Image (cartoon, rainbow, N blue to C red; front, side, top):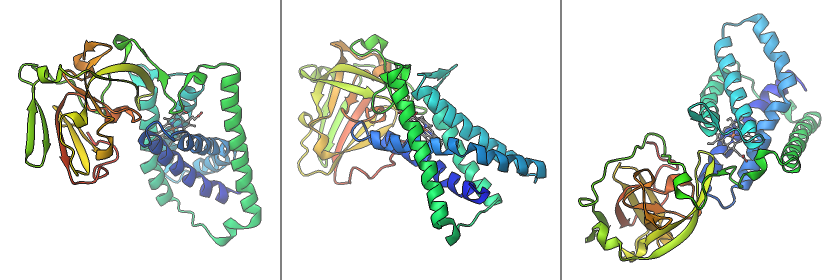
Length: 334
Ligand code: HEM
């Protein structure tokens, strides 16, 4: 493998790992397996290229071009991302002190991208036609083949030797407290924190254009809708629980609206396709008991099949309108 080809291959596979990681977070729990297989293989391509890249690194350091700090940080971040990913998926290592393994893994992955851009900016390698000659395509195929076989060996070995990783769901998440609400972790997306809500003052405003209905907590207590669903958190855990409350479409006339916007008392919000409104539960109970503040008291959204960041807590309004559901950032920014 030439130095040139090694450098040319590393960037697209780093970008592929980055993109497929986010795709896995975005695709809910349906066809999440495919992006995660590509994700793992992309990470393993980087590992397979280490012997060639380390020669380049040694030479670069010997020449000491004064740009070593960006390169070293990049190596460190990519190294942390790969190691924490493998330790999570194979050995079941889910935390490092106060940080979850996913916080470390995704944090290192996110930091590695601007570093990679700076690195390539400092040392550009322009692809030419020679790079796609038969000989080089065979080499690329070889690297992909070895990475694919390594992936099969890792997943097969994890199952065969019943390593902790064999207990993961397709999303990569591990079970936490299923059927036992008090053992279900309390987590929030980024900086959202538990608000103090006085149940006697709390109101739910359900609106569709000029049609506005306001509910108090006791108005919702008469509904007995129920669903057993898996909350699969991007933090690397999942929990199956039974939630009680009311289907969203029973509180507001969905008419010919396009989407429903669900907003929390904290300002956190997510927009859903209108077709989901009969599968979205506004939950007031978890395991037959009122929700705890951390789990969204007095009302939280239960969005079966979607990752945890869609399950808006401390809901205070639901609005039907004509905007398309995808008219929002794919991931909440706060
Ligand atoms: C860009 C640098 C990244 C690299 C090199 C990388 C590499 C890896 C590797 C090698 C694994 C172990 C895969 C396995 O053994 O099945 C892994 C797991 C994982 N990564 Fe990344 N990753 C990166 C960034 C990200 C990002 C940005 C996200 C999410 C936004 C992410 C989400 C995940 C998840 C959910 C798993 C667990 C998958 C499972 O257990 O099946 N990764 N990563």
